[in-house]
Length: 339
Image: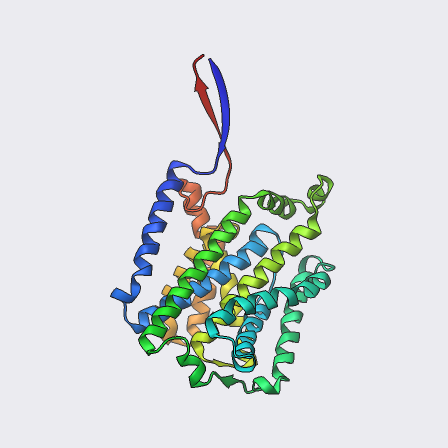
């Protein structure tokens, strides 16, 4: 009898999870047929936050790069969208990927500076970069300066002829964008870069001694994150139709809430931000009328989850039941064959 080995990612649980996820995507893609205008806007907002949280999770949960300044690229992407459409006449939907590409170019010198810092100094550095971007945006008088500006009607109507068509199209773009983000993250983590990321997160010195180009891997992840975050930021403010420095570079809206979602959902797991976003929006929709008490309740939920489930809600579920939606672990399977 001879035996051979093969390496697989999928398990029975992950196959079931993947089928369930695909069914959910089909149902969500058909949302314009069963949902109202408010439902579509809420779902598009959830998709944006899932994308932002997943990208922050890629940075902090897999690369060990804890950033408190991701609002830098949300705001940069938003301002680039307005600049490209208003000043260069670029169609709004085409401006979204262009904004991401330009943001990635801008992120390169920022990365060179930031990666000279370590630990909490890196985190503070990311916030400083965001503040620099905010101050520069407030001085750009052609884009409204400190008071901001709105997209002209002509640019808005160029997206689609009717309001309903615009809402449907933007909704589908939001869904496609979050799916693209998730698929890119899965592909990245299942590649050799994913193994390198985990090695760097667990022990950077050991990873370096084993031949991993730590700096290059970190820069690649940072640029990918900046690119995708800027595209999401551009889409968010295309929906809002108005921009200002304080709104575009808000640390609460685009970083604090994103960290909350990732931590309570499960940092270091792709499913974590999705679960965390669901919990966050469920709390927001039911408790937002309570004013400042709502924020206190959010903090209480975060503390309870961190104490009772340090790995997050999905981490607790996955450890107990073995459930997976996006399989990343490698399993050695033995094939036995008779001569």
